Image 1 (cartoon, one colour):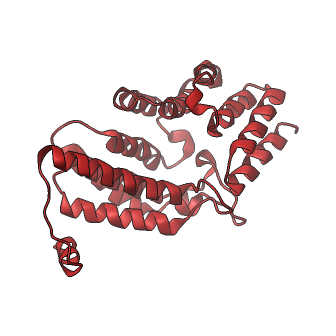
Image 2 (cartoon, one colour):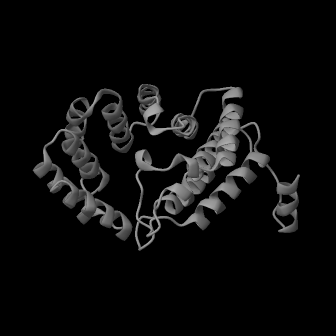
Image 3 (tube, helix red, strand yellow):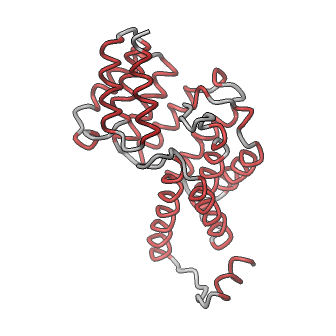
Length: 257
Protein backbone atom coordinates (compact mmCIF):
# COMPACT_ATOMS: atom_id res chain seq x y z
CA UNK A 1 0.00 0.00 0.00
CA UNK A 2 1.40 3.37 -1.02
CA UNK A 3 0.40 5.05 2.26
CA UNK A 4 2.37 2.52 4.32
CA UNK A 5 5.35 2.78 1.96
CA UNK A 6 5.46 6.57 2.32
CA UNK A 7 5.41 6.28 6.11
CA UNK A 8 8.14 3.64 6.09
CA UNK A 9 10.35 5.72 3.82
CA UNK A 10 9.90 8.66 6.18
CA UNK A 11 10.93 6.49 9.11
CA UNK A 12 7.51 6.66 10.74
CA UNK A 13 6.37 3.38 12.29
CA UNK A 14 3.00 2.25 10.97
CA UNK A 15 0.72 1.19 13.77
CA UNK A 16 -3.01 1.83 13.80
CA UNK A 17 -4.21 2.36 17.39
CA UNK A 18 -7.26 0.53 18.68
CA UNK A 19 -10.43 1.26 20.64
CA UNK A 20 -10.70 4.60 22.43
CA UNK A 21 -7.17 5.58 21.45
CA UNK A 22 -8.08 5.18 17.78
CA UNK A 23 -11.24 7.22 18.20
CA UNK A 24 -9.46 10.06 19.99
CA UNK A 25 -6.57 10.26 17.53
CA UNK A 26 -8.80 9.94 14.50
CA UNK A 27 -11.08 12.70 15.68
CA UNK A 28 -8.15 15.11 15.97
CA UNK A 29 -6.70 14.16 12.58
CA UNK A 30 -10.07 14.54 10.86
CA UNK A 31 -10.59 17.95 12.42
CA UNK A 32 -7.17 19.19 11.34
CA UNK A 33 -7.72 18.07 7.75
CA UNK A 34 -11.19 19.64 7.78
CA UNK A 35 -9.81 22.96 9.05
CA UNK A 36 -7.05 22.99 6.42
CA UNK A 37 -9.64 22.48 3.70
CA UNK A 38 -11.94 25.17 5.08
CA UNK A 39 -9.16 27.73 5.18
CA UNK A 40 -8.51 26.98 1.52
CA UNK A 41 -12.18 26.98 0.58
CA UNK A 42 -13.06 30.27 2.30
CA UNK A 43 -9.98 32.10 3.56
CA UNK A 44 -10.65 33.78 6.88
CA UNK A 45 -8.54 36.81 6.01
CA UNK A 46 -6.49 38.38 3.22
CA UNK A 47 -7.14 39.44 -0.35
CA UNK A 48 -7.99 36.03 -1.85
CA UNK A 49 -11.28 34.35 -1.09
CA UNK A 50 -9.87 30.89 -1.80
CA UNK A 51 -6.53 29.13 -1.47
CA UNK A 52 -6.92 26.06 -3.70
CA UNK A 53 -3.53 24.61 -2.76
CA UNK A 54 -4.76 24.12 0.81
CA UNK A 55 -7.87 22.36 -0.46
CA UNK A 56 -5.78 20.04 -2.60
CA UNK A 57 -3.49 19.19 0.31
CA UNK A 58 -6.47 18.46 2.57
CA UNK A 59 -7.98 16.22 -0.09
CA UNK A 60 -4.67 14.36 -0.46
CA UNK A 61 -4.44 13.82 3.29
CA UNK A 62 -8.05 12.63 3.53
CA UNK A 63 -7.54 10.13 0.72
CA UNK A 64 -4.36 8.90 2.40
CA UNK A 65 -6.21 8.49 5.68
CA UNK A 66 -8.91 6.47 3.91
CA UNK A 67 -6.20 4.06 2.77
CA UNK A 68 -4.85 3.78 6.31
CA UNK A 69 -8.23 3.40 8.01
CA UNK A 70 -10.60 1.92 5.39
CA UNK A 71 -13.09 0.63 7.98
CA UNK A 72 -13.70 4.03 9.57
CA UNK A 73 -17.01 5.47 8.43
CA UNK A 74 -16.23 9.12 9.23
CA UNK A 75 -12.98 8.98 7.27
CA UNK A 76 -14.92 8.20 4.11
CA UNK A 77 -17.47 10.82 5.14
CA UNK A 78 -14.73 13.44 5.25
CA UNK A 79 -13.32 12.33 1.90
CA UNK A 80 -16.80 12.65 0.41
CA UNK A 81 -17.31 16.09 1.90
CA UNK A 82 -14.00 17.47 0.63
CA UNK A 83 -14.38 16.03 -2.88
CA UNK A 84 -17.92 17.37 -3.24
CA UNK A 85 -17.01 20.80 -1.91
CA UNK A 86 -13.87 20.99 -4.04
CA UNK A 87 -15.92 20.20 -7.14
CA UNK A 88 -17.28 23.78 -6.99
CA UNK A 89 -13.96 25.63 -6.71
CA UNK A 90 -13.76 26.75 -10.35
CA UNK A 91 -17.28 28.20 -10.19
CA UNK A 92 -16.94 30.09 -6.91
CA UNK A 93 -15.33 33.26 -8.27
CA UNK A 94 -15.73 35.46 -11.32
CA UNK A 95 -12.95 36.68 -13.61
CA UNK A 96 -12.08 39.44 -11.14
CA UNK A 97 -11.90 37.02 -8.22
CA UNK A 98 -15.15 38.20 -6.65
CA UNK A 99 -17.13 35.45 -4.89
CA UNK A 100 -20.12 33.90 -6.65
CA UNK A 101 -22.79 32.60 -4.29
CA UNK A 102 -23.84 28.96 -4.55
CA UNK A 103 -27.24 29.61 -6.11
CA UNK A 104 -25.68 31.84 -8.78
CA UNK A 105 -22.86 29.51 -9.82
CA UNK A 106 -22.57 28.05 -13.30
CA UNK A 107 -22.94 24.36 -12.49
CA UNK A 108 -21.46 23.39 -15.83
CA UNK A 109 -18.16 24.49 -14.29
CA UNK A 110 -18.47 22.07 -11.39
CA UNK A 111 -15.95 19.23 -11.62
CA UNK A 112 -18.02 16.13 -12.42
CA UNK A 113 -15.13 13.75 -11.72
CA UNK A 114 -14.80 15.08 -8.17
CA UNK A 115 -18.56 14.81 -7.74
CA UNK A 116 -18.41 11.16 -8.84
CA UNK A 117 -15.56 10.48 -6.41
CA UNK A 118 -17.39 12.27 -3.62
CA UNK A 119 -20.63 10.38 -4.13
CA UNK A 120 -18.70 7.10 -4.23
CA UNK A 121 -16.97 7.95 -0.94
CA UNK A 122 -20.33 8.86 0.60
CA UNK A 123 -21.79 5.53 -0.52
CA UNK A 124 -18.76 3.77 0.99
CA UNK A 125 -19.32 5.55 4.31
CA UNK A 126 -23.00 4.65 4.32
CA UNK A 127 -22.18 0.98 3.66
CA UNK A 128 -20.16 0.68 6.87
CA UNK A 129 -21.51 -0.08 10.32
CA UNK A 130 -22.49 2.45 12.93
CA UNK A 131 -24.28 5.74 12.51
CA UNK A 132 -23.52 8.79 10.40
CA UNK A 133 -21.16 11.33 11.94
CA UNK A 134 -20.94 15.09 11.28
CA UNK A 135 -18.61 14.82 8.29
CA UNK A 136 -20.79 12.25 6.59
CA UNK A 137 -23.90 14.35 7.21
CA UNK A 138 -22.18 17.44 5.81
CA UNK A 139 -21.24 15.33 2.80
CA UNK A 140 -24.90 14.34 2.46
CA UNK A 141 -25.77 18.06 2.37
CA UNK A 142 -23.15 18.68 -0.32
CA UNK A 143 -24.49 15.70 -2.26
CA UNK A 144 -27.95 17.29 -2.39
CA UNK A 145 -26.43 20.25 -4.18
CA UNK A 146 -24.20 18.10 -6.40
CA UNK A 147 -27.14 16.05 -7.63
CA UNK A 148 -29.10 19.17 -8.66
CA UNK A 149 -28.10 20.10 -12.20
CA UNK A 150 -29.80 23.48 -11.73
CA UNK A 151 -30.22 25.57 -8.59
CA UNK A 152 -34.02 25.39 -8.77
CA UNK A 153 -33.84 21.57 -8.69
CA UNK A 154 -32.24 21.53 -5.22
CA UNK A 155 -34.22 19.46 -2.72
CA UNK A 156 -34.22 21.99 0.12
CA UNK A 157 -36.65 20.01 2.27
CA UNK A 158 -34.24 17.08 2.22
CA UNK A 159 -31.46 19.48 3.19
CA UNK A 160 -33.48 20.74 6.16
CA UNK A 161 -33.97 17.14 7.28
CA UNK A 162 -30.24 16.43 7.10
CA UNK A 163 -29.57 19.61 9.11
CA UNK A 164 -32.00 18.32 11.74
CA UNK A 165 -29.91 15.15 12.02
CA UNK A 166 -26.69 17.17 12.15
CA UNK A 167 -28.03 19.45 14.90
CA UNK A 168 -29.00 16.40 16.94
CA UNK A 169 -25.38 15.19 17.11
CA UNK A 170 -23.53 18.49 16.73
CA UNK A 171 -25.64 21.29 18.22
CA UNK A 172 -24.11 24.64 17.35
CA UNK A 173 -25.41 28.08 16.40
CA UNK A 174 -23.58 27.95 13.07
CA UNK A 175 -25.31 24.71 12.10
CA UNK A 176 -28.60 26.27 13.23
CA UNK A 177 -27.91 29.31 11.04
CA UNK A 178 -27.17 27.13 8.03
CA UNK A 179 -30.37 25.23 8.68
CA UNK A 180 -32.25 28.54 8.73
CA UNK A 181 -30.89 29.30 5.25
CA UNK A 182 -32.26 25.97 4.05
CA UNK A 183 -35.62 26.72 5.70
CA UNK A 184 -35.68 30.02 3.83
CA UNK A 185 -35.19 28.21 0.56
CA UNK A 186 -37.70 25.46 1.37
CA UNK A 187 -40.45 27.51 3.01
CA UNK A 188 -39.66 31.12 2.16
CA UNK A 189 -37.88 34.01 3.92
CA UNK A 190 -40.81 34.75 6.24
CA UNK A 191 -40.45 31.29 7.79
CA UNK A 192 -36.69 31.59 8.22
CA UNK A 193 -36.41 35.14 9.59
CA UNK A 194 -37.76 34.35 13.10
CA UNK A 195 -35.27 31.48 13.35
CA UNK A 196 -32.40 33.83 12.46
CA UNK A 197 -33.71 36.54 14.77
CA UNK A 198 -33.62 34.07 17.66
CA UNK A 199 -29.96 33.35 16.91
CA UNK A 200 -29.00 37.02 17.30
CA UNK A 201 -29.24 36.51 21.08
CA UNK A 202 -26.48 33.89 21.00
CA UNK A 203 -23.22 35.51 22.11
CA UNK A 204 -21.24 32.93 20.15
CA UNK A 205 -22.44 34.59 16.92
CA UNK A 206 -21.88 38.17 18.06
CA UNK A 207 -18.94 38.73 15.71
CA UNK A 208 -19.87 36.14 13.08
CA UNK A 209 -20.32 38.06 9.85
CA UNK A 210 -22.57 35.48 8.21
CA UNK A 211 -25.35 36.07 10.77
CA UNK A 212 -26.10 39.63 9.56
CA UNK A 213 -25.37 38.49 5.99
CA UNK A 214 -28.08 35.82 6.18
CA UNK A 215 -30.46 38.20 7.93
CA UNK A 216 -29.81 40.82 5.24
CA UNK A 217 -30.56 38.30 2.50
CA UNK A 218 -33.88 37.36 4.09
CA UNK A 219 -34.86 40.99 4.66
CA UNK A 220 -34.01 41.84 1.07
CA UNK A 221 -36.21 39.01 -0.21
CA UNK A 222 -39.03 40.35 1.98
CA UNK A 223 -38.63 43.82 0.47
CA UNK A 224 -37.32 45.42 3.66
CA UNK A 225 -34.47 47.12 1.85
CA UNK A 226 -33.32 49.66 4.43
CA UNK A 227 -32.99 46.98 7.11
CA UNK A 228 -31.27 44.64 4.67
CA UNK A 229 -28.73 47.31 3.75
CA UNK A 230 -27.88 47.86 7.42
CA UNK A 231 -27.32 44.13 7.90
CA UNK A 232 -25.10 43.78 4.81
CA UNK A 233 -23.01 46.77 5.90
CA UNK A 234 -22.59 45.29 9.38
CA UNK A 235 -21.61 41.94 7.86
CA UNK A 236 -18.98 43.69 5.73
CA UNK A 237 -17.54 45.37 8.81
CA UNK A 238 -17.22 42.01 10.57
CA UNK A 239 -15.77 40.11 7.60
CA UNK A 240 -11.99 39.84 7.57
CA UNK A 241 -11.58 38.70 3.99
CA UNK A 242 -11.36 41.55 1.47
CA UNK A 243 -13.19 39.70 -1.31
CA UNK A 244 -16.04 38.85 1.01
CA UNK A 245 -16.23 42.44 2.23
CA UNK A 246 -16.49 43.61 -1.39
CA UNK A 247 -19.33 41.16 -2.05
CA UNK A 248 -21.26 42.23 1.05
CA UNK A 249 -20.88 45.92 0.23
CA UNK A 250 -22.10 45.21 -3.29
CA UNK A 251 -25.13 43.47 -1.82
CA UNK A 252 -25.72 46.53 0.39
CA UNK A 253 -25.62 48.76 -2.70
CA UNK A 254 -28.04 46.46 -4.49
CA UNK A 255 -30.76 47.35 -1.96
CA UNK A 256 -30.73 50.92 -3.30
CA UNK A 257 -31.79 49.95 -6.83
